[in-house]
Length: 255
Image (tube, rainbow, N blue to C red):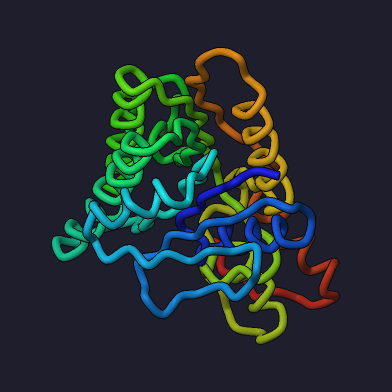
């Protein structure tokens, strides 16, 4: 049994991960949320509302004594406008740095961080951001590196492509296609032959579990980043698969 602190527990991956832990493990979970209304009622869970006062966050870390942090909290905006800048920086850089600082002021030195293929568009070995969101995620990666070098942190960063699975309310491609198959609404899609890399939520959880095991068992410093690839399929083949599964025709307009 491990003591695991999770941010972003209300997001798609976070919700599924917490559900998995509650059903399949005996881990003690500490959930940090920035919304006072969000609480998870379970004896295995301790909820903490972060009021933006870092001294309170540090105190909570010292009291909770987490062994590993899973930092899932993020604010994804594909195409930002001027009003989005503050929230992007606050969510994707400031909050993550405050979590790292709270770790540095406690005994926790292990973190699983998450990135996006948007940080390396066209070339996985080189930084080339697709949008401002990707730039903020890269900024936090660099800050994690600082804490690794000077505070002896162990970290694994997992960079995903697109994700899908049950109870997804993000209006992602697969979810939109499933809804369209039942509503008969027209849906506009990009090039039918465009290749999408999809990872199912169960696969993502497996990667997170492997990362926890690796960080927990390693006898040396861990500073690793991994791209996680799933199913590489064409858009038109995704449509066909959902049509077969639902026995319904999807009204697609390909651009």
